[in-house]
Length: 291
Image 1: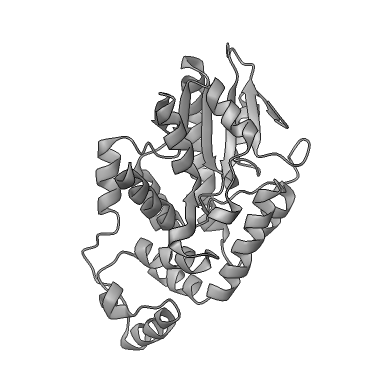
Image 2: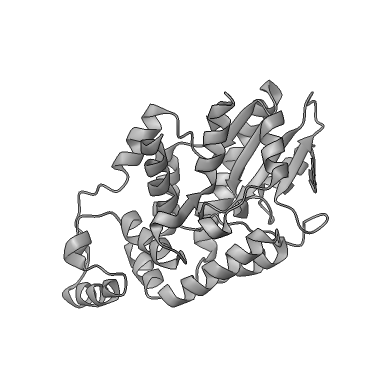
């Protein structure tokens, strides 16, 4: 399990907090982190919970209603199945690259990046053989308002609970699919541009943590949509395309058994969010205040 948790951290760092919870005006009743899915031929309801991948221990809590939803479900479905050996192998490879960062930059750009990296406690020589995903993960490492020894991984905590209770574990996509989405959204140039905004990320991260703890969906959406951190192309790659792929496989999973889907909360709402997409398919999706 220690290896699994370590690999989970690697994956969540690579995605950064792009998938931290978000919401918009389509929310039926306002604040909620858990949604029930029923109707459309389902014999039992399933649930969707928005997650915040990485939290400090002092900020970490899995709401009782989320634990109850897991208890009543047959399956835990995450973005990726971290119990699949093939996925674990793919995770181990995702920071590998066959082209050094310095080889992709001019001398002046390399010098500028080296100066930027000093703010992250490293330099270009140390990370030159890393992938852009590894470079991007530095943002999360710096933005988390506590030492790495004090962080909690939301999905990993849910996973350990599900495994203890002998739930079936499933994934909505493969690691390689997720990495393709990240590559489309954040190339080396855009990653370096993001690295320049470390202070802004630190402020944003704290604001989003507070909103998540309060299940304040409207505030999370406003923070998430800040154009400094995500443009329309990046939103399409990281959210829209993946959401549309996921809602194609979710119905079959729900038909086979009650499931708790645990995904980054930014995937829930918006014009192309999971919840409106499921409603468009004829499901009844409603926020849960308690179970």
